[in-house]
Structure formats: C-alpha cells, structure tokens
Length: 138
Image (cartoon, rainbow, N blue to C red; front, side, top):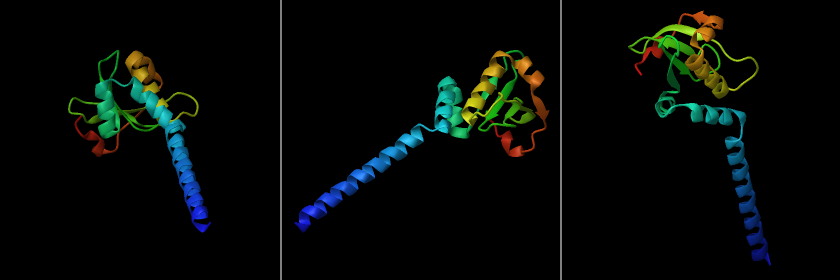
C-alpha cells in the first residue's frame, strides 16, 4: 500500500513540475517584451538581425541623406548618427507617443529613418553622445 502511495505521489510531483515548466515557457514566449523583440527581428534585414543579435544594436541608412544611424537597444537617447569609422557624431532622441516596449520603439525608429528621415529629425531632440564606448566599429 505504501509503495502505491509513494508512486502516485511521485507521479503527481512530476506532473506539477511539468506544468510549472510549461507555464514558465509560455510566460517567457508571450510577454510583451518578447513579442516586441520578435516583431522587431522580423522587420530587420538579415544583416541588421545578425548585428543586433551580436551587439544589441543595428545600423540603418537614412532615406534622404544616406547617413548611417545606429539604433541601440532601448527606448530613449538610443539613436546615434555615426561616421564612416563607426563613431557616434550626433545623438537623436525620438519615439512614438504612448507606452511601448523597447522593441516596438526601435522598430518605429527604424521605419521613421528609412522612410521619412528629414521629417523625423525635424521633431527629434538632438544631443551630444557621451559614451566613447559606443564608438566601436561596426
């Protein structure tokens, strides 16, 4: 009798453990941050995706001037105009209105620079980049 009870208890414990793992996996794959990054990654080119996966930033080319911008992971002060050596020249702060996760904001920044660069920069706040560590070559 004790052996049957012990086996049943062990089986229930395994089921509970499996349910907990399923819940953790579901939560990780379905939270808003993860969905935002998934959407962003789907819109990146293969080169941008590889760059983002390796360095947590990606470069875009402005549609009007041909300048290169680096969009770092984040929601504010995360866009830098970069020179040919990959050093930040000017920082630009702009984001869509409302609360959005970082992936959604970065996607909006990418689309804005690639489709309406001059209009985007007209409403953006300009700042001097501080961190020399951002000047790593691409």
